[in-house]
Length: 425
Image (cartoon, rainbow, N blue to C red; front, side, top):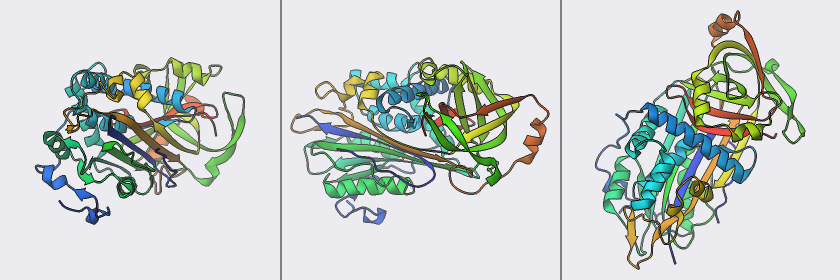
């Protein structure tokens, strides 16, 4: 079975994959893959990948935030404390499966991914967000990549139109025997697309697997104002269960205060149009109780109501890795048909000559984040003027010394690329 391995690089990364399994060319050596894997992308891509010209409507923002918080909360129930997910990566990869779903299976996937809006609006919004993430920005970089892996020499016959559509949206298409070499090739592809941060996402390819849909995201950014050595001190972090642990707390004076829905927090900018956002419940409220009543609408309102205040801030150095199998989570969120061996309908993706049905058997999600004094990797830029301008304003204090929710936000859209909880150190 799948086993995500730890990665060491100081950056935030999400890798997400789907395995479609049956119930009951040209080699890719130039891409660093084995001779048994064929790169079929050129056969299916009509021209340059379509990555521009998409628009994001307000309804998508509301739907995306709602999905983000639901995914975080349900994943936390599955994995426990200190969970991290990438809603963008989940939307992208499950959306690839949804492109080939039919009937009730398609309806459930659309309602789960794009609740409250038309599926076309959700798909376009996701592509528009990807367009924003892939823009070249000084001091920050986000890399995204998709791939479709097909089992060759078996009963599964992929739908040609489906493959062309995914290729035209930028996905690489590979044909492979789905043996040990394919497992190694998928891990190699993931490692390369995440700059080495996740060297392995699979430890085997199950016998009945016929297709993998994979999305990879790598994020790195520098703080606008990095921390100096004298701003970092040991401090006590108080867990909800009464435990106390020593953390390296990074102290600074920030300029944006967040509050609402029984929480208070801070927004700290990176270079390049991204921000780190952290929220914790008001003193005297347990984190679990607060999170249970928190939703996407509350997060949207808090971000919209940000206030320009001097905020004496403490952010602990944070390193978190989460490995999840999300089938149960996504099923509970509203798409159980996709995982049903008999009732799943992915006829738009392909069919099996032996009459076997195709369904989603596993949803693999791995994430990592490291927050330190430089940002998420190295280098920095300082904005002194803003600090001086805010100095005369009312002052707040937000020291994250007890459980908190955090997110990496793309500033123009106001949407999280990553969202997680930090509850134990």
